[in-house]
Image (cartoon, rainbow, N blue to C red; front, side, top):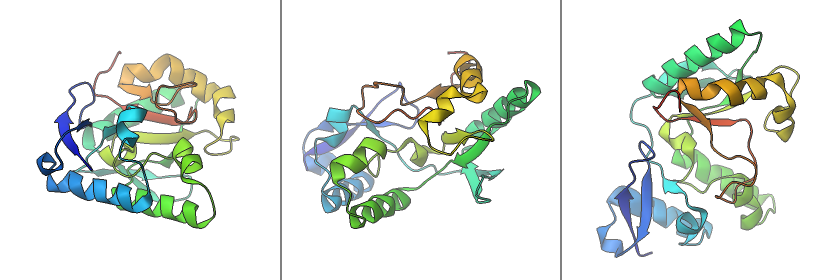
Length: 202
């Protein structure tokens, strides 16, 4: 596919895919690029969307069950920061509930295959789901959040006190809203999606 992986210091764990000789790509990233080919994702996807390849997290710890009673995991640093943030929110009467956290590349592949089998177009799918290898969930630092009374994964989350609290306070704990309204990645607004960037206070 003609890509090589290049380090990107601004995003811990992220890899910016640069146009280059395919032979320079590591086996790990060749596998991802092969999966993209299999799904029909254009080889220019990462560059056009300004998205980075995200390696799967090597070390994960439990952060407890989500709203569907599934155990969720994050990297140790992200888990600690999330725990502190949820405690602070609770002290302000805000209940931040988990929808999802770590998701591997295989999960993302199956997610997109399922949507394709349901008759959705690839363009439609990639508007709301990152291609395998590009999801921040792979790195074990991203969480999808909700709050009681709000339907999961809906833009209506932006109308809640929980979202307003996150906008004002998440940065203190190193979390950032990744896909804001009219973001540069061409991904639909996801007010529920927050990623830990190791830089509290920013």
